[in-house]
Image 1: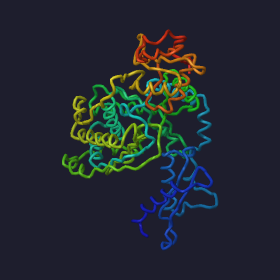
Image 2 (image 1 turned 90 degrees about the vertical axis):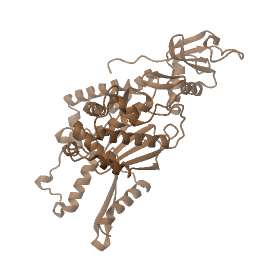
Image 3 (image 1 turned 90 degrees about the horizontal axis):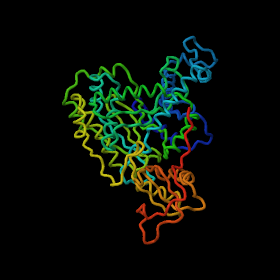
Length: 485
């Protein structure tokens, strides 16, 4: 077994760690492959960590240090002594003490306020085909594109912005075109390794901030620069107390009548460097045309996810590898996910030849907004199919009769329902609808509830507000949000 066999051995180890049961769960599992005919030399090593112990940035540091130990036998000391250069750096206990200081607590409080403010604008479901219903199946599609890699380098050299933000800008442009949102509010992942003492920190620092990308009127270069700016601003507010966030989030969700999750819609595993901003020199247009013929799409089944769509940028150098994950193929089918990834590639390739004006993007993207039902409305930063809300209410308050109107008596999204022993007030109706949201990933709750003694007569129409009797109780069903976070 030689060096050429190491990638296959490493892949086999990773597969074994992923699939084999762990008899004693712990923070780290390690698998090592050795070659007997090479003096039991280690030829591959794979590890499985819990994110309670380390995040991706820490894993990269461990990989680097482990490779250094293998390559430098003098560093392998079993007597506990260290050379001066091997002194331990910033440790988890050091970080815990730092985060307990007044200055860091104030910083965490500011970050928490920022995240909660964006939580008031994040949609329930950023992406799902109108009228789609959950299927319970999930898959991932990987785009491998040498043409897109060339394009990203060229745009980075011209726009002087990060490569990952260029890819994210293309994702945002395609999603905005397909969904009709003029702003995209979604979670991303931040490494939180901005201070010098955290560069080589082995521990878990990554958290999820929320970005707000404003789409209207921007050329592609402007969108890429704007995306970088808002990601950096969000990352500046990415270290906060998640327990406090979850407590206040419950109140915000109850007020808005929806559930949202903090799983990142976009995660970049590509390190940024100054060379990434200067690597576009020597670009030739025919290079992209040749490279386009090598574009590949591959898919594989995945565990289900509550997030309808996610993207992971795994590589840019040589070939761009962008994974798109549909959390439920009933909401985002495989063909839809593939078309999104190819549209992202088309936009990147077009941008390699020069900045793309906002007016040209729809033609390049090539995906029209999907035709939705006639009663689809934009409410509280969410595209809502009223039929989804009707199914939610009927599920939540069954066996009572109910009907949801897109608007009634000057109010949006109004639910009429009959009183039961379990539901006699708007607050009880809203509480039951909030509990049922887990089964209705694209719905939000009604804005207003009217509780009636009986339903319209058998000869009347449930869909006629005038046919319902005078309500016994009416209201939003929301408790007031506490001020002052």
